[in-house]
Length: 615
Image (tube, rainbow, N blue to C red; front, side, top):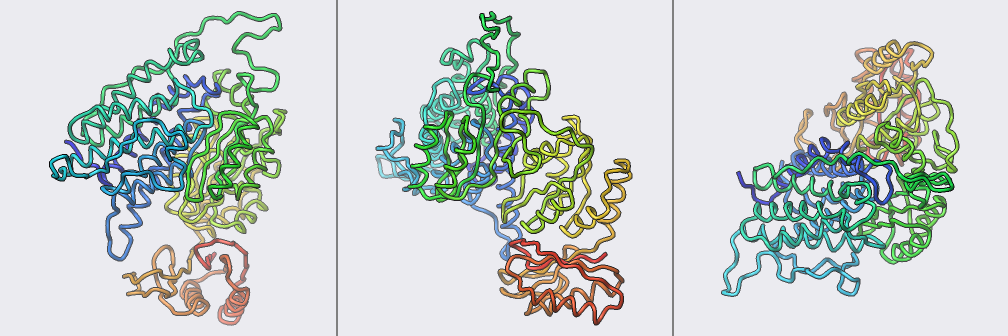
């Protein structure tokens, strides 16, 4: 049945879009010929929407866990969706999709007061925004002075959101090209603007408008016509809009035609031995730049304006999306180092990913899975690919990929031979990031350590994808970083895979864990009512003690855990925790618990001041 445009509808939309992209991923990858035929558009769009959906789920879970057990508003959820897409955007099409979602969030989050574009994001009339911006805010009174019904306001809001999305996407692309996802986005906005009726009717009209435009893309872009395909990014956007139409109407929209390309006819061979589709010597499949560079960037608007100009001179396919100090930068260049240096001059780049198109195109063209070659080829990272496209190191036998919450823990895992995926507060890694880490190991067998109960599903999804790519993978169900450390301590690549997994699982299971945290607000816990500022001692995931001072609470936690036995205490110190606290706890264990050893690590985790493990 029809649904209003509210927080639940957005959550449903994300889930439906993710499921649909999962089904269509391989088909979309197969028709990816523009701007680079690297066979990954479907995968990139899936990972982008996966990150958006995770952020939406986190918004719901965060409100449910609050003292008031509230529900998020539409504004909360669309902003979370846009932020999740921004930080998880992959590839050219994924980056543009993130900007489309941001444009929609700009309007929907403002609700009835949304009329003009927010200041500071570059979407003014003087910036070349496309015609068609709506001037009347959602919920404005009609000519007779009557306020529209809620359903009409929803419909008008969606119309303006889709228009805003298309305009922002055009502004984000340095050199827009028709016959691409941009064209499809405009057609969706135009279809919505022509539609009468409720919000479900508007969503269906947007989907139909986009679907019609998609079919016309081969007539707008020669490379699509030669390949006999529609635009891959546009196909993905139509798939996402289909999820929106289904979420709001309760009915599945008309299905898209199969996306598989027609059988190719042999291309004429030029006198130099290369046909039109052959890869040139530098490894770029279309004669363009050799590398794709993507990174998140913390910078102000003025610095980003200068960055756009510098990157535009370095390469092509430049897309810069975001705002409010956080940006996602995508560009194709020959000099990957210069692109990263430009980001450093503008602000603080992180999550830098560099993909060599030669490896990606070679895999896709050889009938291998439609995935790019190993990314993150920065020379200071383990598993880096030669930036000149040279051969990589021989494939390793077995590797461990560990998710950790701090730089110190990441360094510790790296010293133990593992590939670490460091997390940031409020930004859990998507399965795509874990798959990237698995690929960087170039190993035939991989063990994943999620080190967090909430990340078990993500690790399992990554393991399933790794198996689909021919890698033997297993997930050790570690619930804390100290369990991951215990598992790494017994890791032995020389024994059989099954024996190693069993030993690591046993070591993790034999390690009890605790964390100390500071309460942010008054709340009910298993140990009673806590007040803001109280120190919470959580044992095996549950609040067991409430104290007023960190070191004293930690001593009480240690005493309770060691009462049932233990031979080794592991203390992982969070960012900013004084060394005196660790010294006091070591002395306490030595004086109060006979024959129990203590080891201390500087974990650097920003959230938990102290993590404790008992083996």
